[in-house]
View: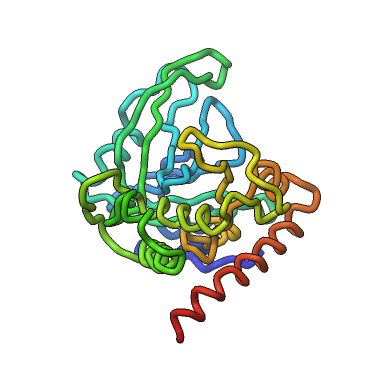
Length: 285
């Protein structure tokens, strides 16, 4: 696994870059063992997450709309809005950057983390979760979003009126656009939603993995397929039309947990490349 050199400034972290956590602390200091690390004298809160494991009631996950659900700190008893938790909630008022790192492996016993980007606090909620002793307690979950927002200036009506080629272009714009923008009347799509809408539209109810029809209709009476990211966020993958494909739940599980998951993902990447060529070629002509 190729590693990146830890930068000398906070702005130097590369999206998708893989860093040894100990080297991050060697450079910037901060608590080395906690998920929330707050280096003294620096305008930053480091968040370290392992979305593949759950312990002490921690359950971190990225939602399809780009929001990151992050568990607060505190191993025993009810969590409190203090210390690291308070730093997350008030990071904007304190002019602190909120930098998220996701564990992707180890090297000689040292944890390797991928840089997922600069995030901002959106909201938080409380729910019951076990602590380190197995006792149920109140745990805080933070809703974090990429800095700059996740809304795109497009409504559901506008999505439905676009051709496949226009939707591909809109999805590409949404993947690379900057700050938040406001849409017109109707339900507003997040940037991730626009990209997902493209993947669902071009699949036309058929799984790109096994070629079968969607297993059922969803609550909106649309064929149910799941949108798969061909390259993981921790590998530098982004919400872009080139990086997503719609597949059935069974194929989606096989990609992530199956014996031949990597082989299936390689096949899906090839299909997505062929699918996208007709849109990129039409743009060039």
